Length: 310
Image (cartoon, rainbow, N blue to C red; front, top):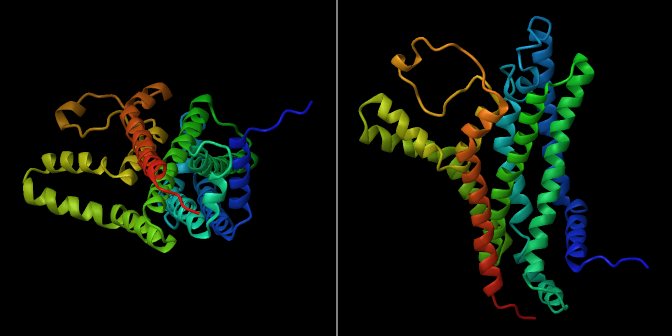
């Protein structure tokens, strides 16, 4: 006897289908392809200029594919840091209010299923679409490099890249949940989209400028100013993600704080193993995951207490 699928799985499949067959997903697919093309161009430049002259045992070539730049296009981590929020907001800004305006939300909730299945299925389906997209891009870059160079990444490089892709999914999921939150609060899709873009624009352009102005007004010592800016930068999801991924994909970074000349004197340059780099960014990981689930928890509570009328 064939086993019947659970109602939650049916809702997730339906939401995935809605994402895939919508114009919104096609636009996102174009953004993803643009990201992949830009990354591949950077890879071609790196291979052309450096691959023949580097020591393959110590160069961390596959990590450089995600962090290095040819000077014309930004590296992959910069591109995904810029386009990731747009992807998350585009998938989440209208998931609730568009259903509310069409009147379909009351029809779905009239069925004998838990109310939280509705919003949970929206989040899970979008997260699956994001995960497949990000991992496809990452493995595309690695596969192209393997075919071009004929070499394979080390275990340390492979673990760093996989965890980088996982944390990228959490980073985009934060913006997805922020879009879902605004979609739950505002009844118009345009309003929720503008609210999400306003938050993204603030952290992308104005946040660092504002922190610099505050820091210069408070501190005269450059060391104290640098510590202040570093701490304030970690309150921004974009700054937190950039620092996390930079440390994870750069094994030569051994600390998250600025060092004095006395501390650097006599130190031997070396690289950290993957486990030590992961411990170094563990607070960043906890902060990013916590911010992601806090946004979703607020949207979940608002949706569960909202009155739904036919």
